[in-house]
Length: 116
Length: 106
View (cartoon, rainbow over the protein chains, first blue to last red):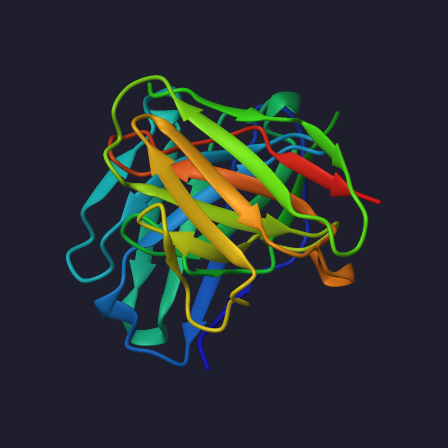
């Protein structure tokens, strides 16, 4: 069965960077696009961007341009999200999700806390 | 960016009730709309795509419809497992955007 397994909780200081991972299993990794979506506590869902794992092509939401990077390692079926210049506003649960529009499978989420 | 206005923000209902949640797009998104269910502490669960197509395995009491830029999620007979927050999402244009959610509570 399809599973997206994300890495564990992160605590970072303001100005730092964070890199979270999402390991896919149960399907052919390069056949489906990856997305990253975040959710601050008690808030809605915010789409951050999309990556084609076959080509490495990406589309980022403009508000994250310049400080977000989505990459992958096809040999281990893993996608990565890196976010830099963190502020307290980046404290949220970060989800990976599979899909090219509708998002049919989601990881369990990673809590990233930014605090001095 | 396309704004998705979802209403109501909270909905109180009872088991067996028919429940309707609405999402309005700020511009045409054709049928490029999905619905998700989220329970506390869990990732969203995919329910419906292309406005009205039920994902495999989703109970038939869930349905979606559209009229212009207004989209509706209907639960025909609310079950205990349905108490959750529901989100709509447009995927016509980047950045994909979500509604703020509707919490269905007892």
